[in-house]
Amino acid sequence: MTVSVTSLPWLAMTTKVTPWSGVSKNLLFLKTSCWTLSLIQRMNALTLMTGITEGDEVGQQAKEDGGQARLNHWFNGVELGIIPPTPTRAAGYQSPQRYRAGCEWTSADWSCSYDAIFMSFWTIYEQSYVGWRDVWTRHSPDWNTPLGNNFDHLILLTDTLVNARDHAVWFSRYRDRFRDQLSRTDPRMFPRRGPVSASASRILQVIFGQDAGLCLEQRLVCSGCGISARAERETYLLAAGSGLDRKIPISLHTVWDNFIQRCQTDPFHQNSRCSRCQGQNKVRCLEMPDVPWIWFEREKSSPVGPSLALTFDSPSQRLSYSLRSIIYAGQNHFTIRFCEQSGKWWRHDGQIASGVPQPDNIQSESQLLMSGARFACIFIYRRDA
Ligand SMILES: [Zn+2]
Image 1 (cartoon, rainbow, N blue to C red):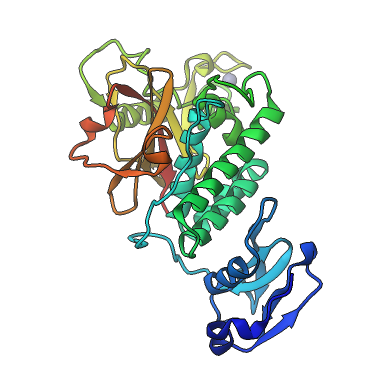
Image 2 (image 1 turned 135 degrees about the vertical axis):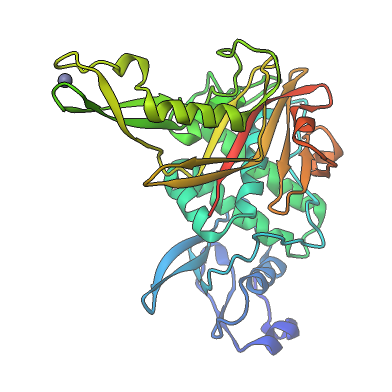
């Protein structure tokens, strides 16, 4: 394929361009000599000239630039250059074409659990600063590197002339790649084809890299012999409701704060005695791993409702998390509700509106417990900056 540079007068006027061949897949690639041309413009030029096809990868890589870490952007292994790490798609960003596409469900290959997870992390990623994205990618690189590359491409497409239908095709294609990877990892748990469901919480466990999710760590010291010990306890079942002997509604915020308070004073049951002298262990401090996101599972009958924010306060750490996505289950289907940085809520159901997220009108936290006939079964929180 050959493209004349003069057929792109707007580009030629914007910057000095040099035709440069030799790129894989016979793409003629315009290597700009002026890096002030935005990545979006460059990607637009690429899209207009060649179309982005399956197998193409768009990515970022940290690079040293004058003593500062910068994000270097790549397209199919071709260096596009350094874009200043501005939070271009963070708080308050509103594209005129916001949410014109999303993952679409089909009756041939049920995808609702993958749709729920993919759309949840897509929206969190899209609205997070580059720093959070980096931490998230490094937390679980096998899963989040390809997801992050795909999300980058979806963000670019939002700003290009690609039509909504084509945009939707990319959402479902990337969702399928994620599903392929899960299916290769565990074909029994994540069957690739057919009208079969998969566990959304199992997907979270896999991509978090830990079955029990977040584990709080107690640093203990024996009051008899003074030897130190450590103990861990998971948090993902705090909203489940099975351990609570009450049916009165209670917020996760309250359950969480009570749990943290207890952990700061009482050793976890199995570690209350020293393993050496059987003396009483005391809690010296509580440590929370510095993870970019956490989740909580909830049973249908649980009295625990979602809270918009959770914090962990200790002498050495102050961490805060915000509720960003809720997964709903019922009638053999998963849907989600997700929250923008601005606080505005949206709904995604792969069976509705071809998978395009729909605006929601949430007035209170209690309204978040149900979505139509489905109940909230998973809360996903993102670590604040
Ligand atoms: Zn002891």
